[in-house]
Image 1 (cartoon, rainbow, N blue to C red):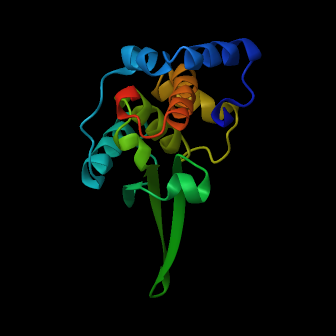
Image 2: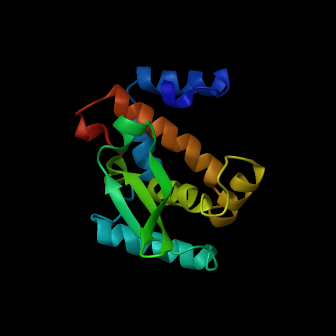
Length: 168
């Protein structure tokens, strides 16, 4: 249960019990059964831009937003926010990118929103500090609950690979 490291033992025991009873997938499906329609990079860009316009209008513009199939394996991350600087003539141009792991293409809508909120918060706060999490909860009041449930979802996917019927 690598995604749940650091959580209290009573919570971990509940997750283990649900896994042992093969009820974790159905519990998640009951709670987060609603999928989303954000299937490609263009739709993802529009989705992220809409959230950004609602909560972070004055932040820097985004140059690129894509699903990245290599993200989880290569960087051990579910989303990344990067700033890329390029020299164009005698000027330095900066571009911001957000990459979201492709696991979120098929994840419940709430989990996609949570990871997008997380990456958008990095536009203002680079570190995972108190201000960062305050910004996350400003954009998504249930941020902490969604983060935990997302970790449970990832644990479920890892424990039942290839069992599409168990996916919420």
